Length: 548
Image (cartoon, rainbow, N blue to C red; front, side, top):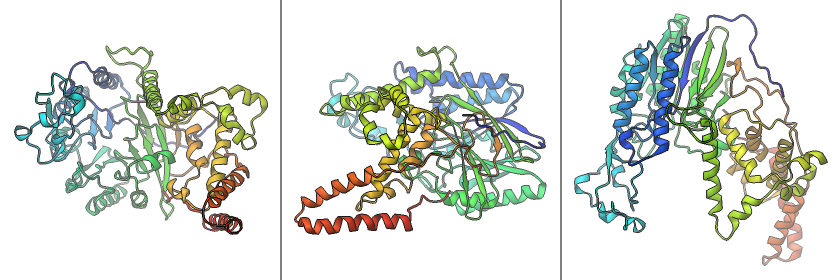
């Protein structure tokens, strides 16, 4: 399906810059023994720095947090040297730090690869004192036979947020024309007419070891508002960078994600109403472009950049034209790392293989042969439930009937991370999955008791699954679009109806009630009444997700 969102009309002067996120750098000192994934991450970071140094069309690099994997001081010092190398090549580098980078009062982290397992991790506690800790008493039963069980574990010092504020001062803070000290945030001028807010995510008085701030402080909001007002008076444009996305990239992520991180609608509404309409973020490792809107009708476009050291190994090249409110994004994929060949050929293939292998092992460990059964389930086993809703032709069904459901789910998860999706509405897998979702939604709508729609945050199953199949609207990768308005999708999702779910749920509920002390006569009266009340309630007052 062809999608064309290229912007038209007269373009003003544009600015080009690179956006990186979630570099997750690991120092060699943190690795105990040979840790191939840690070495691979180190080399990927070095490869990206080399690529950026060689690009004559890029002179500004924005990095949106999770610079290191564990926040240890050694990794930060090494990563800072990479940034110095980039800066020496004439690049302007501005960074944020995030939750993988600091631990407030934590004293140490355990080196990767240490074979001994412990019953507790005292080094994560604010009052930790290595000299007074009996590590031997903390060794778990399974590790007692390890030769290292009687040794003090190899620990490394980590950085606090205050440490990082000083450690990276050469990469943003000292170049800023305005600083919000209480939020470790700053504002820089990429040129006289394009300004950037680098917004950290935590209050100074919140310990990240136990809690994450769900929003910005009132002082920080006032500071942002002041910068936007100053820019307006100067005829300049302001956009922002954060670590955590402000708008959930897809419904599935919102449902499964932690609420400790800053993804509440209040932040989106406030920033959009202040005048911020474009934000670059990271954290999710997704390649994603999504829009939010305030109650006043102001829009905010959230561009999420993937991790360079996870799936997909990508950073963004952004070309911003603030006068025309247009953004052109190109993904720069890292296909290989210096001196670190992977057997799958490319880094993307490597990360896909590692992810699927990990999930397959988790499922196979399910008890009582359940794992084997789950891995063996195919489309043909589920198709009878959604034959009418899927509307597959006989030829389309024959094409996918032997496809394993596990493989489809893995495809959908990879789609969610890599963006856009491969299953357009005309493909058999799309039709089958949307038909299956329609039956699931019928089941949910028919049942009179449990508020499943609240568990799903107000989304239908179809609304959760469809973005994992195919991305309508602005593409997540290699996109050119206006970011000051929400574009309508180019394809209308099919609407399915099915009464099979209503009938099945009615039978199941009837059996449940018949097994109760109530008489069949009472059951015959109560069940239809409850189901009717539920469906009428949903029709009159549908439960809707919070507005973004």
